Length: 316
Image 1 (tube, rainbow, N blue to C red):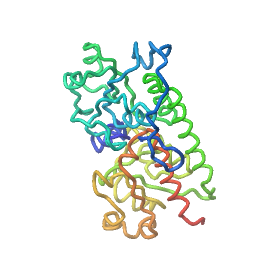
Image 2 (image 1 turned 45 degrees about the vertical axis):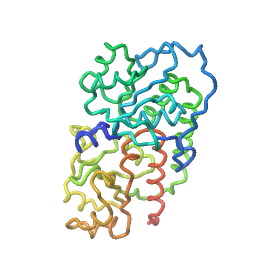
Image 3 (image 1 turned 135 degrees about the horizontal axis):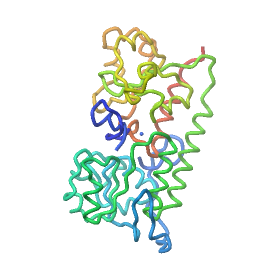
């Protein structure tokens, strides 16, 4: 979910739980970006056409208007080619952050950065067409619906930036890291239940979303699933406090610690919540909003947060 991901609620931040699931994870739980060192450019790699955009040569002035895209570019070693990023991109440290907006993209402001490639998550206000008219190539990488989508986007960016091998390594590290974490989760006769909070008005994400699929991989049961059986909420239903209390989840995951200052103590202070087993037994997990809303290499960190929480719950 990067702060522009595809959620409807929590307006843009949830609504795009994407642009809302990152430097490269060099192994389980690590968040060290890949080095920018790279071999000499291979002239034979260009021209290249990926995702409907054609580049005649290796880009050197990339503008990223999606935090996930920014994290992916730096993760595959293309950071030195990134000239500017949007106002929500904040990882890794030292990215060339500007006041450019992915929510309200301004073609003239973007063009003023003299980009030879622009990376976006949402084609808001027909920004792709506007930039194309200005002869600026645009690659659109929508919020991933599956992990395979994330792997594809990393691979695409690797081809567009001439970092194919680094992108392949990033994908391999994600796959291996996630597989290792999931493999080590102890099997239970009765699956644990969980509530995933997008904001303090009880918007959540079902198992059919990108974020929900990560919890399903670990064998958890989502209490939000019954609230969107017809899919009308797009996988992001708003629950009620009463329904959450009634479900009494074994674990509560907060993805609103930065945006909304939620914590184990604020959850415990909610009427009727202090008696929930997750609150009583210290199983309220504070997540990093950014990592939880972006779909790049740091997804491995998120899966580790989930598996760590599960492993702390005694087997019944």
